[in-house]
Image (cartoon, rainbow, N blue to C red; front, top):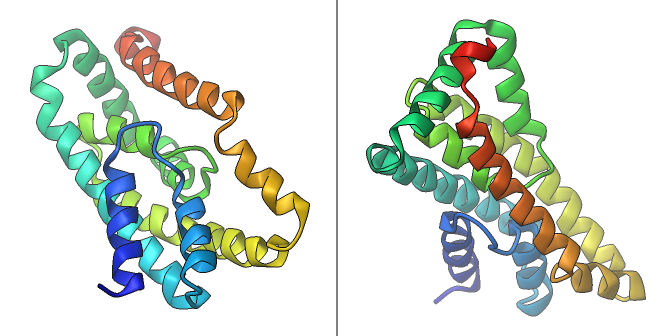
Length: 185
């Protein structure tokens, strides 16, 4: 199996995991160093694979929505109604997916549950934003590879703070669905 194909498969699978998956940029850096892959095709494969994985994750949550607590889904749908009827909110959502430095799993899970939100524009924004960020991460990591700072960055991936941030995002997603948006808006 080609190393590029293996990298793509690993990235798709990581982006299907709802939480606690390694970030795609870390997988890209690993394959860049471990398999000595060229940056540009690796980044392009990373963007396509991550986008595909997030699309499937959103669609899975869209399919699971009927099995979630009705009040939770209703609250998110009310938020979706607000986002889809207000052009500023819709543009803000687009930029959130484009610029978001945070884990996108929970963003795609929420977008999947909110059926009014079209996934295609979010996936395009995600892909464009990730092209920029993955390029920065991969080329930056290559520059730092021989330094102790590079070792420090990899150590931080498994730090308690990183784990706490993931837990906070999950709790944020749960809280988002428990807000009665119709009353708030």
